Length: 382
Image (tube, rainbow, N blue to C red):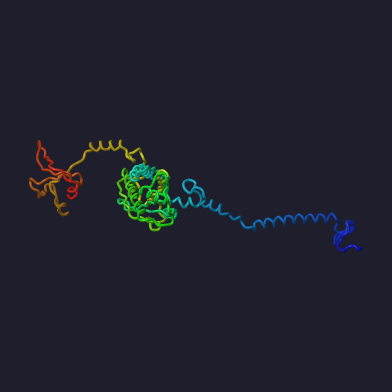
């Protein structure tokens, strides 16, 4: 059996490969040929490394997954408020004013909780516990998009500040108030019927609750400044409750009300534009129940005012003269007064007229006897 021509015998040299004892082509020895092969091998390894490096550079960069992108932007599932914010969300929210820069505002809301605990007990004839969850700053548009529906949105106006606020009552609180006011039995949770509009009876009962809360909110601001919050309208669509520009900052206070096994949540939104008229008062530091007042300094100031010396001018008559006549006055010139002998004399402090009296003499001194005190409105007219 003949061997295949493609099978090489171990004792037969391969084609184109010189035999070990045969001279290399071109007169090169085996040692020279081995050295040349080694140089080519090293060059090939270097070229392969360069090609591998080029291949790595040519590969596209690693693409971030959604979790890494959310973490970079700061919109992950972690806390979105306070110091834990990071990424672009922290940069966007850096323009907002934190409510902690208005220290008196938190005191006002704490006072609101105490007052509401009493007023709601009288309103519902039930044991009501009111608590405040948190107070935070956010953009008004972001809050409108986060309102859980269905809910009732009450728009109210601060009369003295000439601006508006928003009160949001969630569905659980609505049905709990309706159940309590209509005589629902204790120990049973309020029955919720979702997917239908609120009835007239439900809206009327919730409006009564809103009036009570707004009266308590006005009483909470009384130690700081008098303000009246008046109920405007009731909405169920957040688009119709836009009381401020969507990009404006607002203060959100979340209140929690528990009535045994019933209850719900209520949220108060006050744009910073609404609080601007009392911003200086809200910047005060809280000192007990004095709301930033220093009674020691007030007492000292009142005592020093009683000992203050002021000058009073007795005005006998007033005339209108030309400038040329005034310039022409010389020592010895006479000015004729149009006032009579019994004409009253005004006593003024600066430009404010305080008293009215008559001129007389006492121990060789010209004196004025005060006959009546001028009312502030009359003094302003004079």
